[in-house]
Length: 310
Image (cartoon, rainbow, N blue to C red; front, side, top):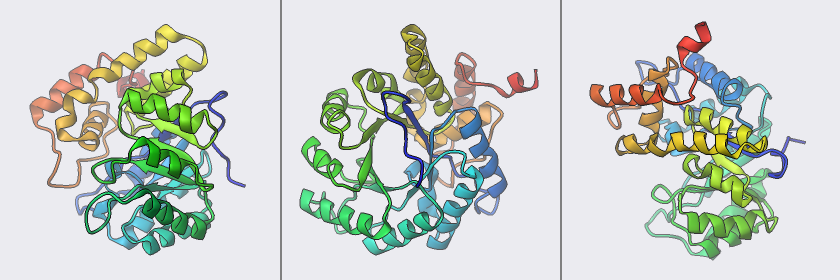
């Protein structure tokens, strides 16, 4: 049996989607991917890895066979050190099932599935979404992480979210709203009600833990601070947890006009952990923006490359 995330009461979860490095020919750089995954596990202290599942991972630029290869390469690089949840989101439920069956064959812990917009436009009704999740979940045999990200996916109200979380297959909910009213309500109705483990974002991590949620999903390098927040919270050191959480007030928000993934890639570069640029043409930082970000990062608890050579 795969290892499940531990209960929130004993060990809050830090779920990290490794970013995707591309070489000069815009192919996935597998060596850089493996090194980045080592950082995510060893330094950020991820408790679960997402393989090719969120928009920040740039998987949607890849042909279907290369998306499968990214999933395989991610699972191989993780090498059973932590559980892996595999992104299977696709407008066609049959394609999502194909990815889910691949995930099961590779020993994945779960599949991650975006609550979709209808391919012909608009937000699906609750009954349509239930059918979509049941069709995919029943054919893969794996637990499901419900991924909520309005924009790429549907903007679901709390009632529809709770209904999906009640499905037998749905064991995790990834919430992207950063809306405290919504987060507080759904922690009560999903996590505390025992339906699924409820995960939010970097900006909401500490308040999520304080309200009884299970943790958060975030990319590196913010995940490095996230791991420190979880450790401080678990140790009962509220002032330290708050000090660390404050470091995520300006970062990444001040640079989010470029997008989350470009900001994370620019930050990794500034920290000496660079994995290349975003897939062109979107999201590239100007030299001034990169310099401002580098200066800010020096004031954080992120581990800079100089620390490792000291």
